Amino acid sequence: MKRNKLLDKIRKYRARYVNIFVDYTFDLSARIQFLLDSNSMGQKDLAKALGKNESEISKWLSGSHNFTFKTVAKIEDVLGAKLLQVVSNDEIQNIQKVEVLVLQQKQVFIPSFDFHHQSKLSSYSARYTKTLIADC
Image (tube, rainbow, N blue to C red; front, side, top):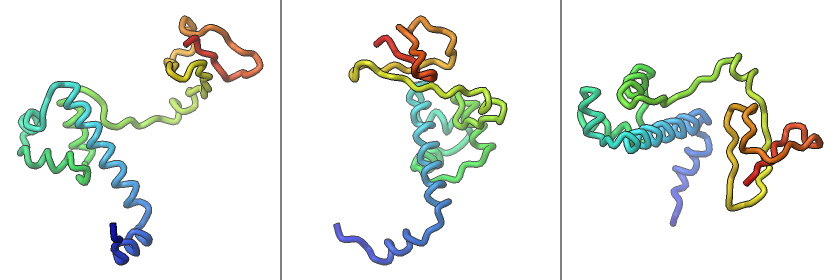
């Protein structure tokens, strides 16, 4: 495909925050669509619950809408789940970094946040003090 030199130049000098913004809006749109699917809802259902036109919801889910926190809160209320998660400093300090050694590639062990529960673990290696060995 032939590239447009002018567009390439614009992309090169575009502020990084624009790329971050675009990533956030696409991620948020994907999360809303996931929650709609999980709740067996469509765009029409969300539009009705929010008092919006279905075409506006369609624009939101295109990935280029600049959501306000108020709109995000309304969507979370309707869908019954978080769209955004802000972590406080206290929560960050309480997070324990855990490395997991997967014994078989076809099976994946995902640790829960309750690290004291060891029913899924076969052994603990003292050599690797922050490594849990999963019983896959």
